[in-house]
Image (cartoon, rainbow, N blue to C red; front, side, top):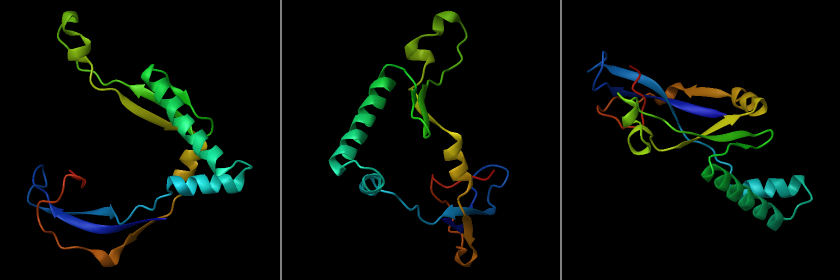
Length: 146
């Protein structure tokens, strides 16, 4: 379950400038640590803890090597990783160079249906007892809701 609380802030810009707006903010994100993943794989397979650790390190190395070569990587039921390179529009063909027209490559993960189904099945709730008074400004990580 993912639990949210209601937070507020005064909008600094946009059509709601100066207005107090309210939004759902994630309280805490539960985490399955690497150690927990290893322990669970050990319980569910005949692999040793060392085998699982080695397999995860090898998987990381293989994915990194493939990405360095510009390849996509299909990880069965998990999904796939691929590089995307954002670009800038230029006024002439001569201006289209690696340095000027291409931005830093980004890693895109596309989950398979089983993972999308798991995400869609998560239970969401909003704690209505936690409405906070607006203090102004806010932080850069909060949504703008314009």
